Image (cartoon, rainbow, N blue to C red; front, side, top):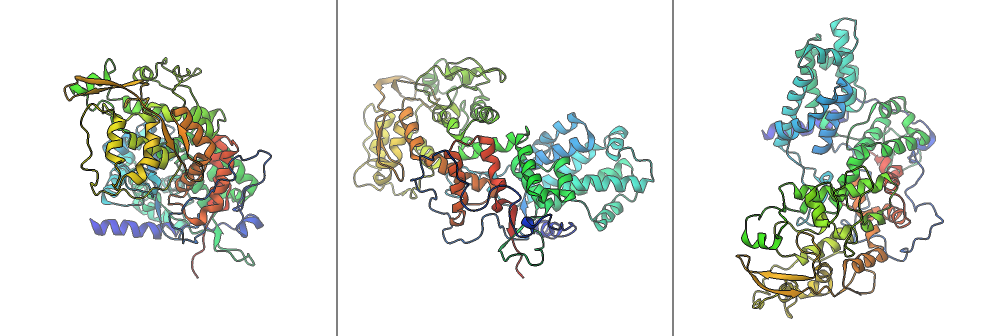
Length: 612
């Protein structure tokens, strides 16, 4: 099996570097490495809007401070594989394009995830293994993926040729010989799955596999072989051959087909559609006006919502929320939950509510700041709506506003602030999410030396009091980070219980659910963020305002978006790009234009030259 995996990986690099046509530069800017778009890799164009956070250092500590690689100039010949989501989306879109059968295309996700049991990707956080990040950063290739891809290929090919009518749709209105008909199908299917036209040599390989016949079994064999091919699963970029007399540069523009693939995978998490393929085939995509128009078109398409939600889910670490119903039936949890009974679907509904907010704002030209401050409920289920004390949203009409003044926006949404099946809050976890997740603060690795083992936890204590006694003991290794940095950001949200409900007091329970006492909530804290003066906060509203005024939210967005766009950790060489994105976000750019802007940068449209 290891040999099989090694062969698969090596074949990906070979297949990706052969059989593709080399497009000549469509204009001088493409030949010299300029971006086919509006922006450059330098500072962003000046704007009439004043950036109130310009005094804040825009570039944080780099993951690889000594790196000098140009951002986006990934090493030639090193394949990047598709994520599972991209496999699902690509095969769904290709199935729809080849068969015009929406019902069959809708079955692809279940086939990949359930039938083939394609393993999910790991959400990689380059800063720490303790928290989730982005699936695009998972570069591992294993036998389970190879086997699942093969199973997917065989099952989907069989379904697409299950009867004569489906096979006929695949072959189209072909009236020539069987060999001519299957050859036309090979070129059509290969163009979609491999994201570039097939060479004659490649076509002949698949013709031989089909035995020059157009029977259902032959078509299925061709399809299964293509879907299981490394050329589908891996993306290898080598860039254009520099034109004679081109200026010296470490980077070269991507070919039109490479650019179309990178653009579609980034903005849609899928493969190029017919219009984008046509622009790549003609070479027009390398013209700045055409490329910019395609970026705009893709971002306006409903499919862009998939990648947008995927990004915010990873940045906000929403997948870290555990099931809310895990302790239903436990006397202590049931006493805490009271009349509210979490459902098996409550956790997913809470996560979806946050992402529905992002989608709603993006569709209405909302800004990044509005993601933080919007006070509408997007709860589509009665359980989450009950936690918000709002009506259920129908997904069409205007969403209802929060009725509780303490619920100020993202920081108090159930999917962000709830902490799963527990009767007590986790202030340290909440503080970590605010500092690491939303503002990208650098923190040292926690010392696991148990220097706080003698903490006195006797008596009836609130959650805050217990946390203070454990982590803020003088002389321990914990106090230096927890007292001035992490704990304050968790304590400010103690006005919300572990299910995300507003509260004024905390009822301390024993293991049988009996009340040991009710104590008032203390949310006052002295919080700090890098580059700012410490500030007294005592509510989510004050915490939110501090984050907004610090400029750290926009800077953290920029760093995370670079990671998401390029599938790697950000480095010191990304400084100009991070700063450009930060400026746009700070100046109120709408989410869609902000998300699309990186595709107009030379970092996105170029690749490192192959060594001579």
